[in-house]
Amino acid sequence: EDVAAQLLLSLNETLLDHLQGRGNEAIARLERQRTQLPSTSFGFYHSLRLVAVCEAACWTGRLDWGRAELEREWPRAVHSGMLRVPSFASLLYVGRLRLLVNLQLRAQQTDATLQREIARMTATMSKVPGAKFNATVQSARLCHGRGDRDGAIALLRRALTEQPYAME
Image (spheres, rainbow, N blue to C red):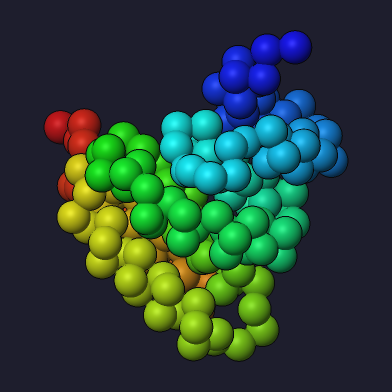
């Protein structure tokens, strides 16, 4: 059994699970894969799995599970070198912000802690190549969730100008 190959495919498998409606299987596999990761470091495989966790939590609605995973793993990601690699930083930041926004949208009232985390993530992502677009899209989702459709549309229009490969 090639554990390294399975961990390398963690995010791809989760995206495929999403397309095929296999939420429970994705969660079970991600739980199993957590036990297969080195516990003394945080690197490439950990990053792919954490992005997959955020993705799976959002589409299955298992937001509390995703938040618990994020709270356990995020400090390790921050102290690793992975957030200094632009491609991984973008993936990790986008996954984390999307999960935080979903949690905020699910809440019956504004959660001040989530609001602060979202503001910090949005500010951080505005400095990461390719991530500013995603931060603005998530801000639009929050705006729409508050009932401000016009504000959400304005943010989405702005996001179009922030795309790394903006269309003319």
